[in-house]
Amino acid sequence: MEDGRLLEWTALALGKKIQAHEVSVTEAVEQTLERISAVEDTVHAYVTVDGERAMKRAEQVQKQIDDGTLRGPLAGVPMAVKDNLCTKDLLTTCSSRILENFVPTYSAQAVENLEAAGAIILGKTNMDEFAMGSTTETSYFGPTRNPWNPEYVPGGSSGGSCAAVAAKECFFALGSDTGGSIRQPSSFCGVTGIKPTYGTVSRYGLIAYGSSLDQIGPIARDVSDCAAVLEILASYDKKDSTSMMRADTDFTSALVDDVRGMKIGIPRDYFGEGLDEQVREAVMDAAEVLREKGAVVEEFDLSLVEYAIPAYYTIASAEASSNLSRFDGVKYGYRAKDYDGLHQMYKRSRSEGFGAEVKRRIMLGSFVLSSGYYDAYYLKALRTKALIKQAFDRAFEKYDVILGPAAPTTAPKLGESLADPLKMYLGDIYTISANLAGIPGMTVPCGLDDKGLPIGVQLLGNCFQEKTIIRAAYSYECSRAKLAMPGNVQQAMTGNAQQAMTRNAQQALNGDGQLTSNRDGKAVESR
Amino acid sequence: MANVISDETMEYVGILAKLELSEEEKRQAKKDMERMLDYIDKLNELDTSGVEPMSHAFPVQNVFREDIVTNQDESADMLKNAPAQRDGSFVVPRTVE
Image (cartoon, rainbow over all chains, first blue to last red; front, side, top):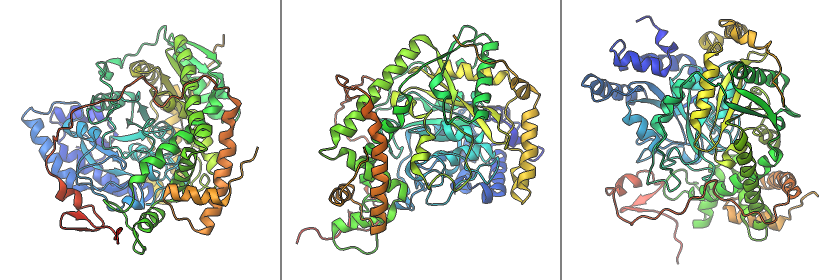
């Protein structure tokens, strides 16, 4: 096999070659590990890479493929797991000092499902500490860099997972999404990611941030890979009391190139102040592609959009302050060295173990839950959540899909976001409401800006309607050049960053010409 | 209206949050929280009278099951992550004199 070519394939393409015995699992794992060593110094997508474990698993999985017991489409495919998902006997840090030495004794259900399907875990990906952040810069282990241009952030909080997929350091990855943590970094890194309907993927073994909002989902190179991974992830689990029993998780059956008659709504509220002009254009062009294919596209007013962020940060911080009270230096994780008595041990361990953003949210959460403020803040936010859900219910009476940007801009530069937390929170405006309403959403790449950074289009569906958004996303993907991955990260890393990236951007844009021609598309019909 | 949080309230929240902040951290936390609360106050523009607080997006009920042990004894493994352990127990500072 020609070196490096294997890395260009999608997860499903690789899985097929493995089943056909054209490639061995060991070969796939080896080449991906080589890729990791080549680019990781610059990208830093992983907190932990365990090559030995992966190679051992590769042998076992190969045997099961050879004797016919493993026939799944992802058997033998190398993947990565966000570091807030427990992996048995494999370090799980949540990118926090407080868990820097935590080795779980069990695996998350989502991880178990994938391992049972034969996927090979290469390691654990970097993230914002406890998934709190939008840039992967709040990680205790240092930031991840955007493979398209290492001067920029990959987004967050699943920035490591998205960067690893974009830099071909794995074939797909798991992320978690509490307020956009799969969809926003997918947009920034030019990859595809799905946040499923709340309750679709078991949260057992996911280190909780905001339990009523958290949902695990796939991040991959294209829509088909995402659908295939989600099909394996989705399962009813008694160990998660919010797990849903669903009979319609055959998501790959929705990979159909047909949107005729599909009703797509574009919320005017998502195209107002603060939205970058190039992002607006690229997203509108994507809507135009679907309209040309027979979808009915119209604009509408979703309403309440500006209330989603204050409601979200109240609810998420409240739940976080409760969830993170388990980290006290007693049973696992970091314990302070100097303390006087039990209470000071708790306080010092937590104060030294948590980073600034985590402490900020724990403080806010403790405040809004405290007596005297509970009604005014926490209950008010829960009432707002009910109104936001109603707004989506009304929208989905008219539309099958809501289409808009995933983020107001492309990726910001490293070091630009953390100084002003509130400004960073405002970047979550288009993704946050899906978590409040429990609905599924996905991001698909739809272009590059003039800096060569990826832009993503977000598709939202009604509860349990993943198949509708997958069909729309797949149809869109069929009609335009797939966004090339950031071609030569390695070359870019060795100094000539700007030049190599720009060339790569050119290539991606020209592709087979479709992406550029789409940019001349007509304005979206408005009724 | 700008929110002003008293030092006593910050002290109280610190106790609830089980965090020990330095003077500088306290000053910053107070500033951050006042700013966030000013922003969250935007919710007061909404009339939510008669709206039930929604803690869960779907009408789900609590799930009950019998309390039956299904896993093996993993106590030895669990203790491996303990910052301090002795005789099959977690070691903590003395709490009762």
